[in-house]
Length: 393
Image (cartoon, rainbow, N blue to C red; front, side):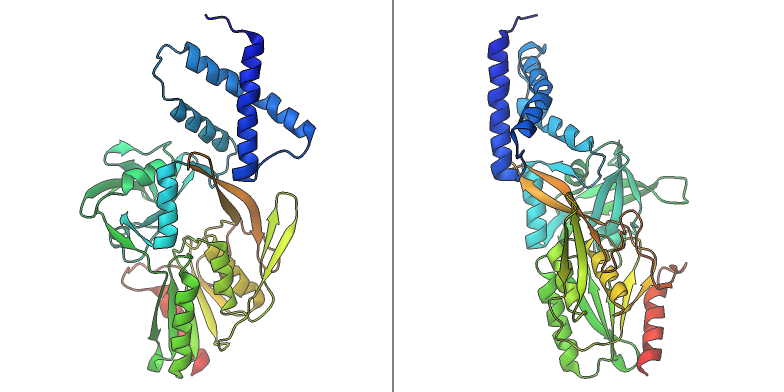
């Protein structure tokens, strides 16, 4: 084995560490605030760079992809945290996620997925998409993609294999609760247009305004306000049903804005950071009538959906109807790295206005309604319509 000059090796390590730490200060808002912290960080990182140097200089194959090795090293660090929501995002995937959030369309199946215990779990299918029409369910576990095992792959790897050109086919095998055999679905990809808000009038004499929120993105607040203005100008609306079933969440600010459209004053959500500092976000004011309100929730209602549901329940503004929610009560931030890749990092936990933690717990509805055996019958919506008709008659 090649002998190293110890001094040169240490200098190489410290120079590299210094570059990483300075970059972290500038681009990731991550860093140590004291000399002791920095010294401890340098000491902890020495074995990493020693291993990296040995790989570069001693590994049998000379033409290795160091960028890939480093990326996998970052993934390993994040995986060691044991947090399914903290993850590394390569440059292509980060750009794709930003486009999804701000453009609202992409080519694929129309499912929101997460990673847990080395399994890819479907949080929810997006309404009116190929996956939704194929009867993919929230809670399904993807075990195969085009005949290859999906065990142990990351969310980004799964997304890259599931997305594709409109008109192309992908076959997925899913494991569903209480069903032993793997269910196989052949699905034709399509352009997924994610409209944040859909609305219509329902009930006796069309006196109920029905609003379906599919995601919390930059357009949600504007689209919701447009719908509420139409209902307010209608003059016939006497109650509102807000549907956030199978809504996997999105932007925190969007959830606060949506909640504010129904709650006139008071707290919407409390955010608790790593230092125990709690920030309280209050209603930004509601200019719309205090219509009677039911909120439809289920096991696919997650994150921002739960912020809205929890705020409405705790404030007494309305009643939740359906099934217990998913239970994602943590907030992530995206930090962009120097190579245009990124880290999605869990940075805080949120609590409902009454300071309930719902993470890995979920929110119990005020009125529990199970899904009926007939897929054509929406038992939860039907019950909400019945109760609302009784209130406003």
